[in-house]
Image (tube, rainbow, N blue to C red; front, side):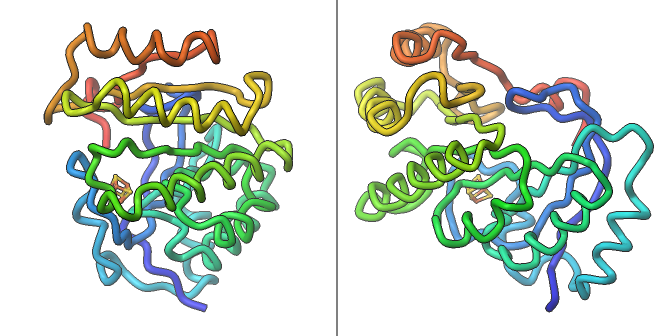
Length: 237
Ligand code: SF4
């Protein structure tokens, strides 16, 4: 089996509930989606980065793993594009007693379930209709997959949290519809966090809109947080 990695580096986690933690990022190549705010566009082509055997890739991880690293983050692109390779690499990281973290748009429940046994922390990302993730025809179907991934992660007792990126284009009624879909399928005590992440540098939402979106989540989950991508403020990748 081969894997295409775009890059591997240590940095400070700038997103989600574990922001601030020293993290080894393993960025997989490849993502077929088209979010307008994507900040890793160079890694979207499946032939970006370099190809390795699984053995070469595990050695690369080992040689890049610094002392006192909190977790290894499999990101992309979308890591589920190369789900079989990610499962192998995550299994290797877990054998070193380091937590594994999956950062995905959760577009396919079967691929997600293949990787899940080797993942400790799952960030389940839901895409708003305005993100241009996919065309409107396919948006609902992919949301259904993300909801199934959320349920599967919770059932497997993984640390599980939700992230939604919002922009000035996000419509409160669409966002509310999505939030209702989520909380119709999970209980508030099931999840470990709910992050509203404003876009940075492109179509940034106003504070007024962020507070409106916060107020939509709050009745369902009081610990909802608006967290920007903090790594960008310190110039970290
Ligand atoms: S799913 Fe993620 S990697 Fe793919 S286009 Fe959207 S933001 Fe970029």
